[in-house]
Structures are given as structure tokens and as C-alpha cells.
Length: 173
Image 1 (cartoon, rainbow, N blue to C red):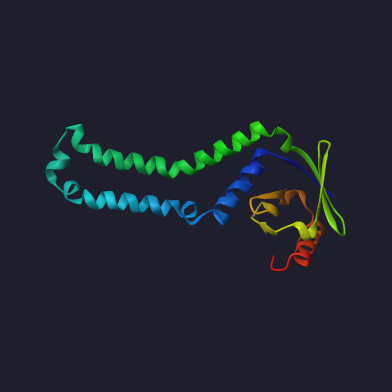
Image 2 (image 1 turned 60 degrees about the vertical axis):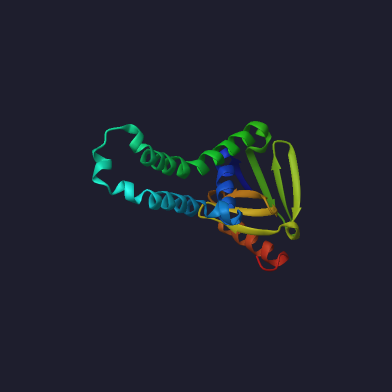
């Protein structure tokens, strides 16, 4: 039996894993898209930026393009984290029952998740796959939701049983 406290931090870890590994190409490589936009802007401003007169001017309107680029770089790199945190916070507010003490029982043919009076059973063959990062195991129920298990709550026996059962019933995972 695996027992742990499922917290919003655990849910956020799954969100980050999912975005980094299953998101669309644009979302996955958004940083490079923004860098390309910034490079294009700088290329278009190259003559202005290398003029000695530009740096001598104290008129703020002459510096607006440069200030725009600086602000763009700052906000674009912070944007994804802000949206992820907002999504997590909205989910936490709408679904407080999803968090709290959980018990996961591994049997020969199924995995049982029990939390605060709710019980769900999943046969190992119903999982689409298994993934892990340095701190968590993710057992995918469908393409965009998973059972999240913190690694600190598992023993070596639990880990081996999870891996072997999912592999046995799901070819290729």
C-alpha cells in the first residue's frame, strides 16, 4: 500500500511534465518562437541601435523600441509560468476534493485509489502508459490525466510492481 498526501504542488508537477512532454510543438518550443521575434525586431532596429546619435538622445520616444524589446523579453519568458500557476489555482479552487490523503493499493490485477471516501479501481490494462520524472510516477488514465504518485512515498517493491504490471499489460511502455 502506498500512502501520501496529494497536494497542489503534485498537481503542478504533473502539469509541467505534461506541457514539457506532450504539448503541441508551439507550446513546447515557445521560447524559441519568442527569441525569433526578438531577433527580427533587433534586426530591423540594427541601424538605429548602432547610430551614435541614438544613444546621445535623451528623448524617451527615441528609446521606445528598445524599451519595448526589453519589456517583451521579460514578460514573454514569465508568461507560461503565470498561465500554469493560474490553471493550477483554478483547478484547486474548483476541485478541492481532488487533494488530500490518498492510499493506493496494488493487487495482482488492479490498482485501487482511495481518497476521503472515494474509491476508484483501475485494471493495469486500462492505463495508457507510465512515465516518471525525478520526483514522481505518472500512470496515464487517458491522454491528459494521470494518477500522480510521489516517489518518496514508494518503496522499492512498490516501484518494481508498478513498472512490471504496467509493462506486462501495456506493450511498449
